[in-house]
Image 1: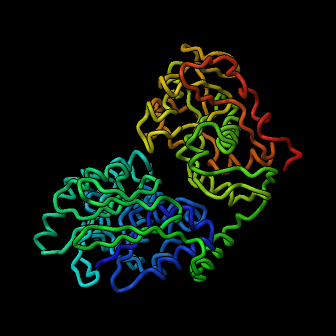
Image 2: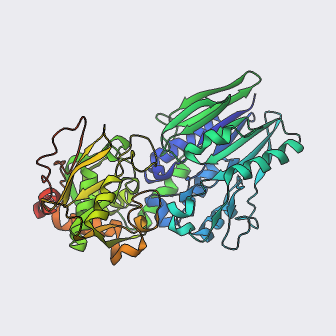
Image 3: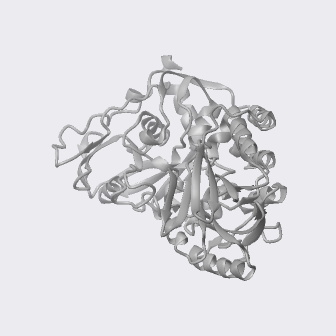
Length: 478
């Protein structure tokens, strides 16, 4: 009975060397001649270690766990196509990618050994693997803007036809499509979908085909067993697993060499960075970042997309540059955009998953500074919105500080695009560090975003619309 050890979206796990070592130790302990180790993308970036090594820290992990098959996620191109090619060359696994084209329209990484499909022998069976990546990746990742991502389902059907002609015993789709896995499972001939992209765990059947996702940041490895009666899944946590010290030590050396351990401030009350906090509405880390952007640009409003705040350990005690880079691990600037009040109201509406279909159905997509809104979850409508304590004037022009990513993405805040650009400032985590040094780090939840139900009264929403220093602490907190 072939087994598949499935990891995906391990991203920030590298920022905790011991946990990364435990993840490697767990997979190594589960591996065997009857198993294939499979990654389904976003396993090189983002994160602190990824930023300082351009994704190459993943090579140490791949070698330690002896990965067999891997496909690309959108974040695997965070440092550009050439950096991704270098990782491919030095990795031990076979990279499968059926729908990614390079800058010249050719199959990505073909010269470096990337193939659309491969056949591996797993517990005596010939198992065919193919890989597909979210076709909207150029919108999700500006560093992939010159690449092309073709229809993943057409690519899947072509791979399945070829693999069936090869006489394989089973066909496994290695996917970074997220919610698109359901349609992938319906491609005739696919026996198993090992997926990623969406950060929630999953193990459920679609038309008799098992679809799995391990979640994010190396929290889980899924052990999938296939036999003639179907598939079974066992969930494994790295907690308590032996530490692969080679992986842990290599990560420590990379982070230390980058000189990111300088303290920038101190937190009295730990600041949570869980999915529930970041995607649930107003939260302390969201307020802190939005305050920093507004302060840097002297803008009317600071706006941070929730997807740009990376999950990870709480900020607690002494906070270093590495901690802040872990929150915002992207080499992209803060930009100023000019929006009419009508456009700003559209952007406020797009903070709700009821308006913008991205991620999970209940996600909240934004965080604010200088503004306050009331949103009715039941009616899926904006009840009220203020900037600086005054109702938004549809005809006025507002200056908004936000990540540059928003200008390129069709997924979050489509109301804002490149033609709104009015200025550019520092790199996101550097802006955050400068703000923390000057104002301290003591953000509070104070009513900037109120999610109500049943048409509750939206009065009093100007709370929290004052100067960033009101929520960012004082100089004495540094």
